[in-house]
Length: 412
Image (cartoon, rainbow, N blue to C red; front, top):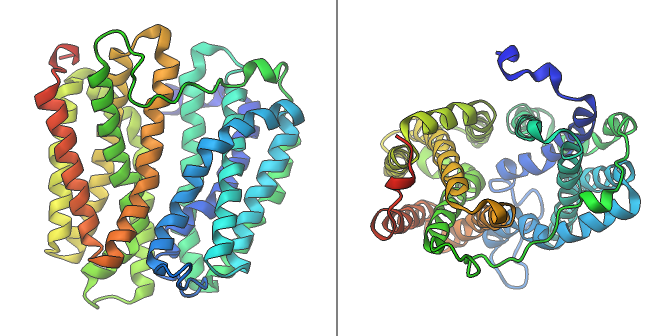
């Protein structure tokens, strides 16, 4: 397996650059599991006369909104400080934000800490991207895939082992320990070589015309359709399901298991989301190549809706858990095929700009999922958030199957 993917050939400089992010991202990942069911412990009360349930979703999402602005400043920081010093700065900010989760209480402080994390992540992400882009471009895919896997590995450790340790020694203690991981990350950063001509390597800020009005090839609606479907998938699997997993399972539980057990199970379920990303992206991508984009998207949509419906019908607690796990895996299949199909229909000369816009739809979906999910939960029931997901998937499917004809672009 390792020979097939040629992992030993990954340059050490890329490893030194990505490991700090894998360590620092743990604090962000674990918050999605422990905050929704323990918001009282973190001092969440009515703030600005708004119910604390809304603030849970807002706080879990705000770091993604911050990135729309902090990405611009990240490029300037790297140009001014250099790669190594920027990594020192960003890991310190990220570590302090995680320590803050365990020290400070209340909505106001958590908003500030999440903004801090959003800035930190922008710098960390751009740092490893620029490091990868300093090597031979024929290996970009492998190197970026390796970096994504490292990120998800940190997240997986946080939502499994981290959650388990929280139940043993307490949430505050674990968060502070995770935050202090920025100190050992300095050992890796100290070995990172600065890049030459960082200014020229910095990614350009594209025109954020998310509706592709400048597209002149006549496939504008197809680009919007794929982008909206990407938004819907991200809204469901990366936003809503991850952020509301604990309260949703507590709603299904009906007092069969303790709160501690539900939190541990929720961490394991979310962990499978990262496993799906780490190990099955290549598998689903290969199936998409061989079986056809259109066919793979069709089956993925059918099974994704099916698993969501079975989960919210609450037949059995463990059936619900299994359906949520399978939904995560199917979402990886769906998004892999969407990414490939988008790359096929977009013009090569504008591909980088259009893909950036497409990725923004993904960020918006992941950001809106927690906010809408908890807003609905505060007024109705957490289950209704999943009903919204089903409606969005149906609308996206209507656009995909009725308004567009993708069969001619789908390999068979």
